[in-house]
Picture: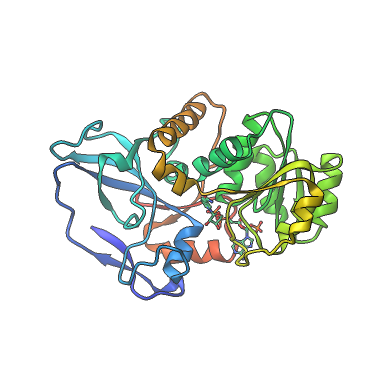
Length: 324
Ligand SMILES: NC(=O)c1ccc[n+]([C@@H]2O[C@H](COP(=O)([O-])OP(=O)(O)OC[C@H]3O[C@@H](n4cnc5c(N)ncnc54)[C@H](OP(=O)(O)O)[C@@H]3O)[C@@H](O)[C@H]2O)c1
């Protein structure tokens, strides 16, 4: 089988395609033929050695894939050959095969293509956990989504709209804002040019109730300043590179909450609740309430280019690698 290997920490151009022996079936494990690999911002951090988990090269990146079960080892329950699944290896996902305990597999929603499914689990679970569990978003409230045309951003637009919220999407290009509109955003802000705080206040009629912030850097403070009293600022990530330092007096004056979101950590400590959270999302996909956009698809061997485009903010929406 072919895998994409990170031979040296640094630029994604260091990724190489390698041949490895096919994986052998193993008791308690399920062998999956990968059809598509999700490409996440986390993968770009990992190959640079900038993520909190820092494997030594050589390693195979890739945290989430979609594929078809080839074989089921003795004692592994719940899956059969031919089942379409989402698999979450965490690492080793940029490969033609993955071998995992059944607990790392989830049935794939039938409405999704393999490339859509490969980027669905983490993105949508993060959005749902943030907006429902952490912000307790209510129908009729206004959500400002930063980095809204990115992976977790578009998922947040979809989830917030389905929860009955009004969504203001902020992104850095007209093309990205158009994607946000297509995903269901009510209003958009070109935050690379417009004044984020003023526009968000104007569009929300005085202040937003929830800020969904996977970007950090210079955008977090104006977003916080655009909040209505009782607002919740969801700290999702720092794709912009800088961890913002906001003065605490602002939080006092705004009478708002700054709410940390670590879906991965919560999910591993609350497996049953996380499974229920995912099942709810999968049901809403099947019933047509949620509509994940098809990703930009790259050939498997172009993994380095996909990561480079994500790092350079060239990808509109999600990216995925296809194995045909
Ligand atoms: N807390 C959690 O549980 C959790 C779970 C999953 C992901 N995350 C985090 O969420 C963040 C976003 O992940 P993602 O997979 O959605 O990434 P993504 O698809 O690459 O989207 C990130 C967005 O951030 C914006 N951005 C601003 N400055 C950037 C820069 N210097 N480089 C790259 N992007 C920049 C881009 O939008 P514009 O060009 O429009 O500004 C881009 O669309 C990451 O930090 C990730 O680690 C957190």
